[in-house]
Image (tube, rainbow, N blue to C red):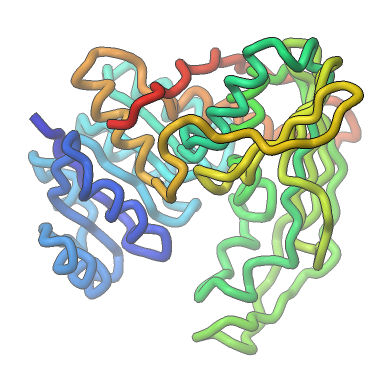
Length: 359
């Protein structure tokens, strides 16, 4: 019996979610909601589902069992908390919340209510990173020494139609893009135990070059270049740089280093890509991504949650992993402010690898 799913937030990312969800046998897409009623109506009509302009009416719909929260980051906590209070399972876009304390309360409240809480990114369930996990776990890389991750670009004001929220609390390159990279590192290496970082904010205003707000100025309230270090539970040391200030660079998204080989990991903002492996003393070569879901599949974490509910097993894009990522991101900013290493209190286990066959 498919589980009823409702999507709140019909903005830029919603269509790719809805395309994925509407194709799954485990999902019955029943409704959409948006603060801009006309937008909800357009999306609802496109997918043949009920549309709501009011959040309460949407959340109180008894057909909705899983709420997919695609609102802007500043609304994630409030919407998710209200959905949990009404007995709904929730899958949220990243970040889980704007602060670690808020994230803790969501995880605790969902657990106390016996409800599922999931969070993006689910790209780590795709073919690229799942293949990389298999390579690492095969033992052929030897002991894992470290990893390096880089997400650097000029900023989102060149392409996003309404980029202002990227430069407010809960935005910036770490809170916006960091979840992809940090979740990938957790998937590959396990939990971290401490972080430290330096940050900078070079421009307090930016000019939008995308339409429809071309030429308008937006204020910048958060650091836009973050250089961080991570100490993992397994002894490896990682480094991560996220930036909205870099016009070009030549670093791969992620590399993992072992005593017997090194691994280049595909872009964690996608599901596919081609891993590359270099054995000790050898040359780089491509590795076939032998797992399913190489194509764009945002919403895969929701589908996995639906199957997990039916099968009575843990879902993979878990809230406690998103909370760990949130603690790391907040820890980087805290470390930069205090000029000290920040110890982490969360240590979630990795979830089961994806099956070799697709649903």
